[in-house]
Image (tube, rainbow, N blue to C red; front, side):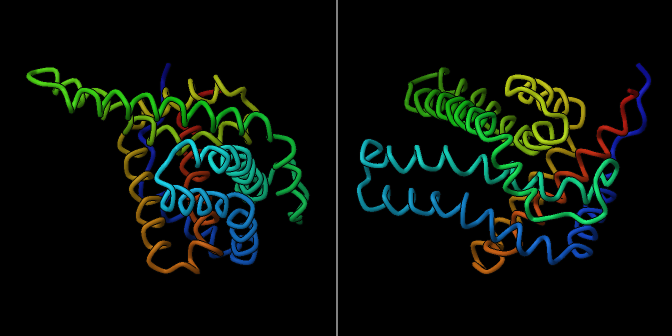
Length: 233
């Protein structure tokens, strides 16, 4: 099938930051909601694991993260999506959309997070195993490192496919993989942009609380929309 030219990396970067600036109030509130509901349990997990050093002791905190981080992210995407795709939505975007998205996509986002964490654990475990091996088998660690990096690139599109297209968990994974394979450079740059935002957020904590989720979501949603525009209906 005929496709349009590759997506403009500068195009989705500029559009993402411009949209975040235009809707700064919604970014601040939506990011704060995501931080309180979704990211705070992750900080709790980090603190528990740091003090105990035991995955068994940390298991309840891991479960709490799985039950909150994905749904909170789905809620944030549900809040920001009408600002990218205004068609079919009222002119005024209500904060209620955050909680509606949280409820609507709760179990799908929990399943997506659990499956993603399981795959990541398997890949990292296999990579560590082969790194400890002798001889040429160490080279297999590179294969699993590739799988880890590929999964990171895929994660840019998980919640766009989940919230915008209402896909099942397996379809989210399949479509995200196909998008990364066909838009590798754009996916890589998008991942680097989100990573830089996260590092800056750790250096300047208020950014993490009131800006990070909104900025990352606008970048990812704009990239997703431009990528979809490449393909015919």
